[in-house]
Length: 88
Image 1 (cartoon, rainbow, N blue to C red):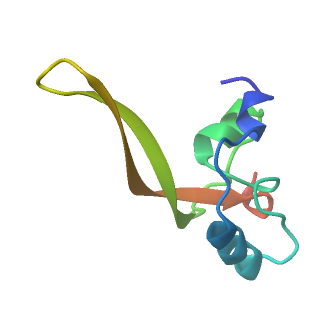
Image 2 (cartoon, helix red, strand yellow):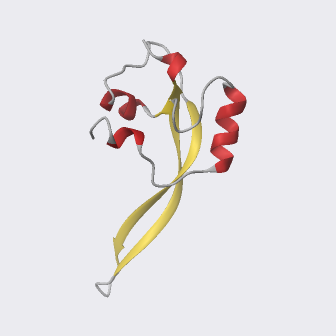
């Protein structure tokens, strides 16, 4: 993942944005909150002993059925995200 790709999102969640704004009003969701891997792709590192805030994200996956057709399946997953104030 490149630095530019790390800052782009396919899906935005108003609920997640509301949660992250309540936790740190100084930081903007989807601009100052990223996963560990996205911070690394941008050349940043999360400070030691920092714990991420867990939010739900929707993940799409292509599944091959028994008849050979491909179907897209969506499911929710909790992932940790880190604020820019948690960087080393």
